[in-house]
Image (cartoon, rainbow, N blue to C red):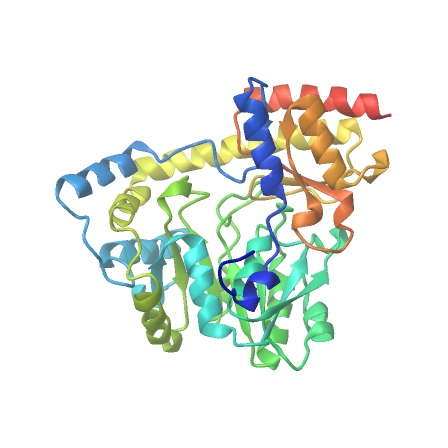
Length: 391
């Protein structure tokens, strides 16, 4: 029995079912089982030397006090320069709020935009925490089935068909978690056109934007207009997951409102992480990040054909992030059963599709190739033996 009543919003937030698998994998590893993780969306790379040096300088100089609720000016300026260098866009620092991770940015965006009973459209499948941020602010999410024929993304027709009287906006991610697919620029433009027709908002998650393969970095959605709200992070491309640092780009008119929320909800982003992040934009760091991006591309180019050769149906080639969304229905097992058996019998941990939506979720599992090539090669051998025994 709970010691006191809890808020109704708690019941609206589903547990992250994959955590049960993570815990079991950790328990098996603690018992001495050689477990290979292909489940956690975290780069095996860590912060490059210039970032660590910037951190050490900040600590030595006592830069550990509260900063501005919007983030330190040099970092906001560095992010602005980053948009100019990578995307050819003029995004003034005044539109950029540094946050406690992309999660902090999403919380601010939802606190700013989502009211009680308001509805936000998202593709199914989608990253579960995104819809739970909406629920945390007493909104609801309408998941729209998005199949491989649409690269698991939405288009303008989806928005128009599903927009209801309580709908306030759309939240998308490109590249996407769990599918690793990007949205085509023309499809994104049609989504934005449909949103603008209804005077809604578009929140666009770009935390994997620079982790794309087979072509140039997709241009930021900010290129489509100053009304687009963009989330980004130092966690994925910049390999700083535990540093808890991200940013939010807003229309100028919304910045004072978001700052009011930020100063009350978070006080400020982590101070030492902000000073350290300045090292991300040093030339030597940028060269390292490009090498790492190429390493992720090589891993993808190894894992996807290997899985297909075993019989996994991967209908859409992932072109970003570090995920492969694979259909396991040919073996007559749900994704949950497949993932649990793979862990128990082969010692490889993956994520079942049940966490990412409701549409055909039992068909899918998500593989992560955010680990070294030797580990991936061993994992492919284990998975091949496991699937061969299922036939």
